[in-house]
Amino acid sequence: MDNPARAFDPSTKSIAVIDDVEDLAVTLVMLLELEGYVAQYALTGASGLVLIETMGADAVLLDFALPDMTGAEVGHALRRNPATSGVKILMCTSTLEETVKPRFADYDAFLEKPVAHYRLMHELEGALACP
Image 1 (cartoon, rainbow, N blue to C red):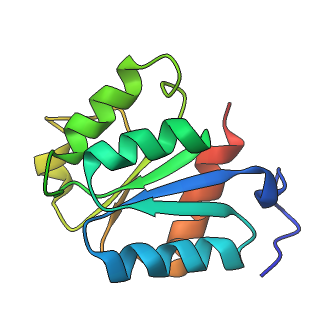
Image 2 (spheres, rainbow, N blue to C red; image 1 turned 90 degrees about the vertical axis):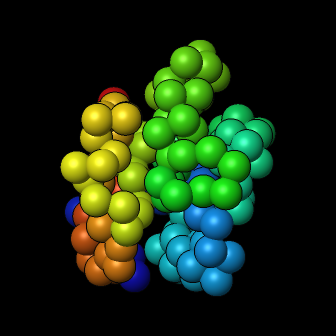
């Protein structure tokens, strides 16, 4: 699924997926890998924070409803940490944006589940293309 219009080589970009539904997280990782990205997943906010820092993620697909903390708490932790403050955050959740935004608005894109493949790739590529 090569896209000649990409401003970057996806194999140079690492994406973390934080979602407590393992089947969905695994599916998203497989989809991202088919698109050429390096991708890994975590099922909790705490393990996701460790994953993002360990893998040096360029972007994260972040669910809001996690078992140990909210996506807002994860987002705030990412922005506070100098090592992860530049990570592109794509909220990918079934929680309404009106609920998420007052708690954490510093995301690069908001995707409501279920999200179409085209929209996910469009928003991810757009976020990664911005400095």
